[in-house]
Amino acid sequence: MGCFVVGLTGQTGAGKSTVSRVLEECGIPVIDCDLLARQAVLPGSDCLAQLAQAFGEQILLADGTLDRAKTASIAFSDPDKLQMLNQITHKAILALLDHQLQQMQQHGETLAVVDAPTLFESGADRFCQAVISVIAPQPLRYQRILARDGLDPEAARKRMGAQKEDSFYTSRSDYILENTGSLEELEDKAKQLAQILKQKVGE
Image (cartoon, rainbow, N blue to C red; front, top):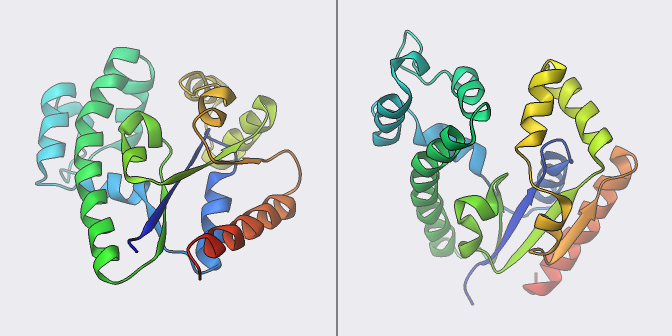
């Protein structure tokens, strides 16, 4: 049997990072696509060169690394620019993801989680046999983003405006975790799901 790959996604501020952490604590290997996204744009990478060409040298810091905040503010203010950013970065991230999953397979892993905020949009879901989505009501997510990312209200609203509706996630998912209560309740749901996934692959 190969490695059973489960995608983990959800709206910003819904609690995906918490679920990811709990699944990892339960012994399930997690591939963090945000980390892959950072690797993809390291100085000297094709991806970073393409971004600088598309958005201008203004998105580079003095040391040649990507100014992520500046790039995000440019991209989130214009749907066309966001699409261009995604087209360039997703391709590089998927190549890294494919490589990492192959390594896991070679190491005999039977279960892995791909933690990706843009699982469907990037096409990463094609690597997955099942999908978990974490969703939460909009007012709750708004408060969490403000507190977590230190954004001003306008920037938080823009970021949320770029997000998909609940139905976009629920219609494409095998497991849906609704985060409407306390942190402990979400952690408990994630632990239960970890057991279900492990039973599925016979662990």
